[in-house]
Image 1: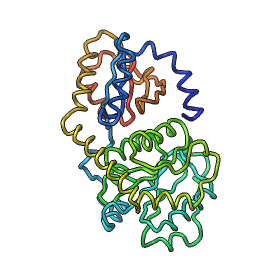
Image 2: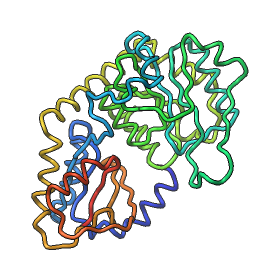
Image 3: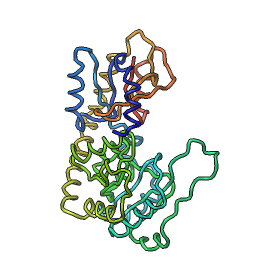
Image 4: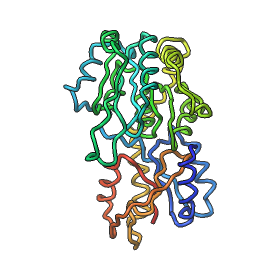
Length: 328
């Protein structure tokens, strides 16, 4: 775990005793045995664990951005041939790092979509956004195999596309759960917070990915040759094929569990337990945001509701893409 995540978790540990249970944006198919261990450890405290994931911003069978440039480009590519590269909204690379990534992708000779943008700023009115520069001539040299995008992209839909065969990611849990659900293996490149643990979970526990860089070497520059080797291994090797097969099997199992209504059963179990309790429902107030069962962090947000109706609860939770461990 990164230092900032550990410090934040330690600071919030005082609230563990007042919570009544945890809601996780995960599936029992993915982390069932770990959720069971958490529940067993707190049996005497009557604290329940609910897995109501995957919570995704789009339906699994719904393509809402049919005219998106990425989806149009993917439609022209062979099945499982494209690696999607995206590092979320909080990661910025230096010019040297961008050069190494670009050279590695070019040398790998694999098809790719690369979302190249600076991290979102806290204040959009302070100065102009940084213009990230690529090596001279790069886009021309890779125009037949690669697409560089500088704007927002429909990530879940890209991952769900039949031409996508790999995902190079920072391993934020939202990206992880989307990739797992869509059955896409990950080239894990964690940067901070919970991401190192997520990367370990994907590569060492689920075995559906490869590490780009060991966390212990996080201060070192990741070279073009490293990028090239990881992309080749993931997309064009027997080892990569085995990893992709495991990822696809896990994704299929997660989707089947969703189709069987297991998410709804978990959600209804939570609602049945709590909606009649005569308490102020502290929604987003001292709730624990548990992105994985093995990595607990907390956030404090000011917002309360009085005596929520069960249907309101369902609406609130089902429309929250970052879920939740609610404290009552």
